[in-house]
Image 1: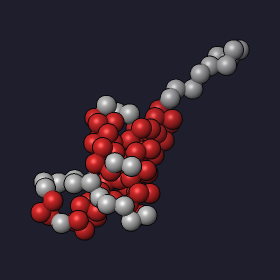
Image 2 (image 1 turned 30 degrees about the vertical axis):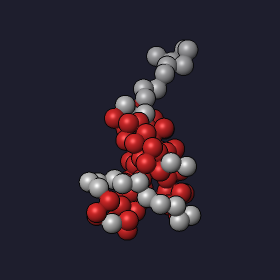
Image 3 (image 1 turned 60 degrees about the vertical axis):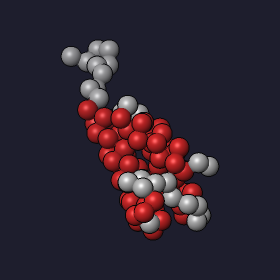
Image 4 (image 1 turned 90 degrees about the horizontal axis):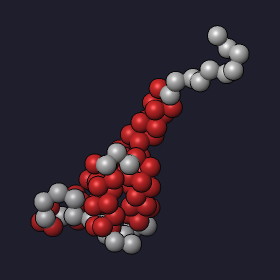
Length: 88
């Protein structure tokens, strides 16, 4: 896995409102980080330190998963009910 590319792709998916793709990428990055993989550089440059980049990446990824779940639930609630033939 290339965590930097995954991070970039996740942000791009969010910009394009592709919530399913963003959530999938966030989960993959969380799994990578959970297994001890190195973090992408998420803010500024490497001088912030690996621990800070890891914490920020994990927080944002968890937020993406949570928010995309909420967005998906809201969209299901907003979908208008269709009339069944014979209903008036």
